[in-house]
Length: 272
Image 1 (tube, one colour):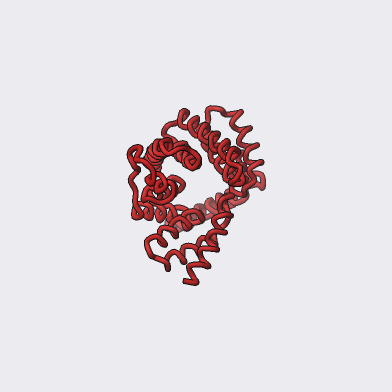
Image 2 (image 1 turned 135 degrees about the vertical axis):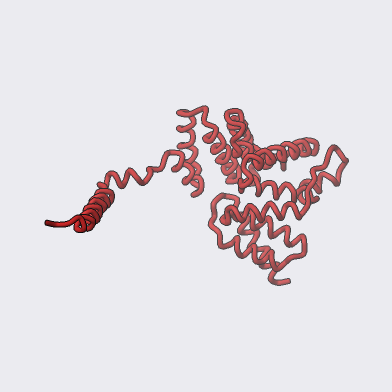
């Protein structure tokens, strides 16, 4: 008569058979089930993709439909604000009225996003972006007032999300402008009209480097950081940054102009 010593092998064989059957069941999903497992892109996903391919008409159409269906969605509102900024940048620079119209719309959608969800960092980010784009065509007093609001919105955005690349990029530009570059310098050549925004190259450089570490594709950050390096006398790093930027994909309309500027700048720096 068989003894109990023969049972363990039987037990192991049963377990192996069970696991084999289970594995076959799990691995034999139908094509329909496999397709279901791979998420179908939503209309918003498709709109986002269209925006990054600079197909603004398609993105606008899809975002608009989604907003009509979901008017209280904060994300759709800030995404349309982002689209309006991109549309403004795609308008020729000499058509100021058309550009400003897009930037004003961007601010409206960004404010709507914040009203719906004040804890959504992107609403604050794109409000700051739209205000910044409008700042070049307003009076001196309004520029000072606008600068304060831009910094306020960027501070909120980065408090809510310290890794918001767009907010960091704009913060870098803010600090660079505040270090007596661009329109802050032109302002200070006139009368003193209010509190001057504080900033310097070190703060600007830190913001741009962090933005690059978060998303290494964005051309703007390399270009802006290269300009800081030039102003600081670090020509070699400026050249390296420009060469890196020229290898990146064009994601927004303004990248095209920056590429032209960087080619000219690189030619000048390598001749010196």
